[in-house]
Image (cartoon, rainbow, N blue to C red; front, side, top):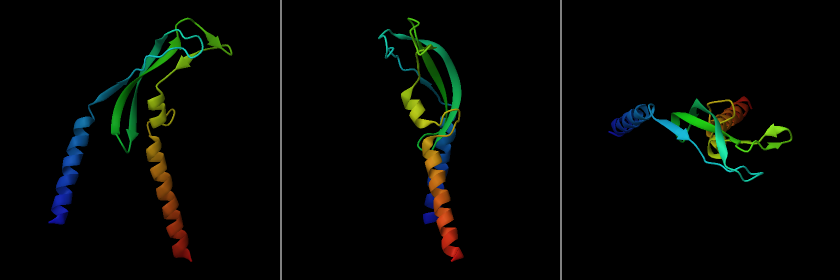
Length: 119
């Protein structure tokens, strides 16, 4: 009885995840240059995949912004990107920080258990 309920719940969640695989999220945060106060313009938009424990697998279109007045700081153009997405995904990776933390904790627990069994 319990196993059939668990199996049914698992199957319904798997179906929901498969339905969400087709969802594409667009991340566009209108920004103002922090140095000169002029509105920033879209420099480029890239499509990337992401995978977090909280959100599952997803596709995201992320826009990168550059100061429209051409303001430069330390010889480089002032740029900005989504702070929310940067807080979710590891740079140049599709893996979320929550997944990295989960794997680290699992490895730590595994190591502690192996050390305790060796004694």
